[in-house]
Amino acid sequence: MKDKHQFSMVRKSYLRIANKINYLLARDNFSKDIKILDWGGNDGVLATILYDLNYRDITVFDVGAPLKFDLERFPNLRNVSSRWSEDLIALPFADQSFDVLVSCGVLEHAAFINRSLEEINRVLKYDGRFFIFHFPQQRSWTEFIASIHKKSGHSRKYSARELRIFLNSNGFEVKKLWKFNFLPKALYPLPEKYLKYYSKISRPVFWLDGILSRVPLINLFCNSLECYCVKVKYIK
Image (cartoon, rainbow, N blue to C red; front, side, top):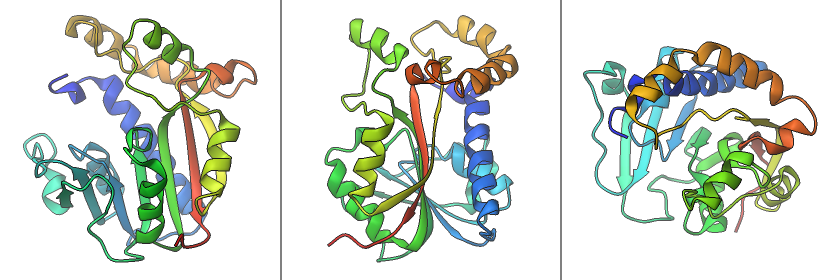
């Protein structure tokens, strides 16, 4: 949807993610001058929020045409680097270039996921951090409904155990894994007027979701698996 970030529900989702990244990095004593790669960052919205949190060395990378940021809405993106490539796998960066790499709704779409993880491992420094957000959970009730109506764009849906094993086998130790998005946030098929109404109650929606997503059994049906990983070896 054009200009989807005008809706507070979407903006608040990125704020949640940026604050989670900031909290976990601060807990592990990372400074603000680290190098961050927003892998598949597209329009740079997450990058600009991280910039607001005083992370200054951020690169947004995506596949396809050169990135065009909305500098009028997000002026901080003037201070953010951007790179693009037509290669679906290879990243145009040297080995061990970044301290942190963030995948927000991207990894599940990778054409060759194992090879993409090899590249992520390659460009991360040893002991670097890898964040994954919005990876579809196998039992997600929203994914189930979307699949029935042939609206799901996710062919990969893992259980928490499967995702953990998969990451471990590709050189990443999962330090923390959690579930989120029991309540849907992206209702883009709906007309804009309904999205505007839904966005007006974004605060209670996120508050309630934070509770439901921590309840055992209920959280088995959340939409998203999210995790915080550390690079433990280089994949050859």
